[in-house]
Length: 378
Image (cartoon, rainbow, N blue to C red; front, side, top):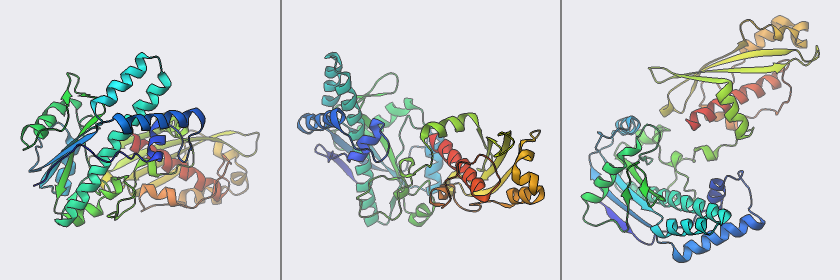
């Protein structure tokens, strides 16, 4: 049974993680004033910050929490216990941020606030990596952490979780931490988490939702057995703003009782002749459950009922039966996982019609990426 308290944890936040939280595009390099502000935040925290972490192993898991998702994950993994953890960037961090705001330094405040979030994220990730090393020696696996406030876990459970973490250990928490009436933590740059423990190691490795490596962004870990598959690891072919708009305006998702998901996407384009006549095409996709990696079980592409715009396409005018047969026959990535779209080689095509195979594959790629984005966002 482990119980660890650390008042000098590593807080060497990776530059790319800090840049990501600041909202810059992937691969961006900070320059000028932004680079100065980022460095100022790092230097101040290196000198004055007082981060800490605490973790304690427990046998059995209290499934009376309100999180159905946590309960489902623990049951799928046949978890026999858990590691309860608390991490904090320290009260000094919040006090300095408030001082910057009072001094009317909004830019300094923003960069410092974001660095505080990066510290907490880094501490949590490092804890997960350390637990993986420990569990590996005992032929166990550690599940990805879950916290109150995450989807399907009411933030009001923070108080109960903090009581469990701090109330039964042999050592006190290394720093001050409390839950306010809203369920939020004070200081704000802190996190409570549950890492499930299971002896069903092979089962966990097979399931995407439970595989700690596929959910862990700690890239230098020497124990990594699978690549990170988090949202930040995917390279979409279009920008996030477009994906967000399409997922809201063109896509609908329906969860079925058996765990599968029905997705419908409407594509609005124009023909390449006839002065760009508008056309509407509907895509339907059935996906397998999340824990299996959302395999593509069924898919179909067909003109939207009531719309005749497709009949104006030049390929349809010349060879109608051949074109429609090709559209119906093509089912790229069927049977594969949804995120295989990111390794699918296809041409970038600007044509908004369906006259050639490259244009049709390009649109299937857009459909899959939009579904992927929507599922990850929710």
